[in-house]
Amino acid sequence: MQKRPVFASLLMIVCNYSEHQSGSKKSESLLMLTEPDIEPKRLQNINIPVLITVGENDLILPEETKRIVDNLKDVKLVVLDGEDHGS
Image (cartoon, rainbow, N blue to C red; front, side, top):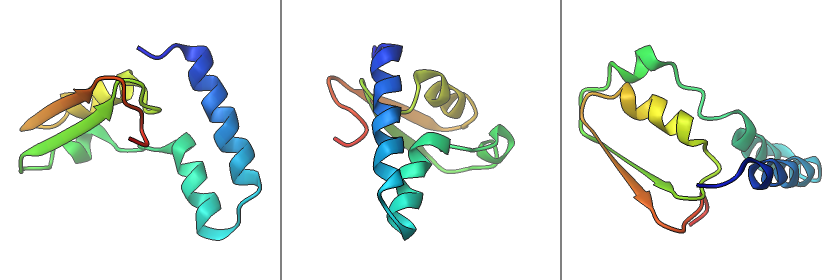
């Protein structure tokens, strides 16, 4: 599992990077800080099989991934060893 200090450092990098971007690039960088913003009730309405892949060192916190997985009806979670969000 990724330790919090590394995660915090990566968030600081994303914040600093986004300050030097404009338009959609800035928006994409800021999404890393605010997404996923998915209401559990909306996830429960998905009625198709879902495959979720995350990296072992993903920027998305494991608690957030668990919340998403727990609210889907037909889901398979694959955690890729040694990988991160950009893999």
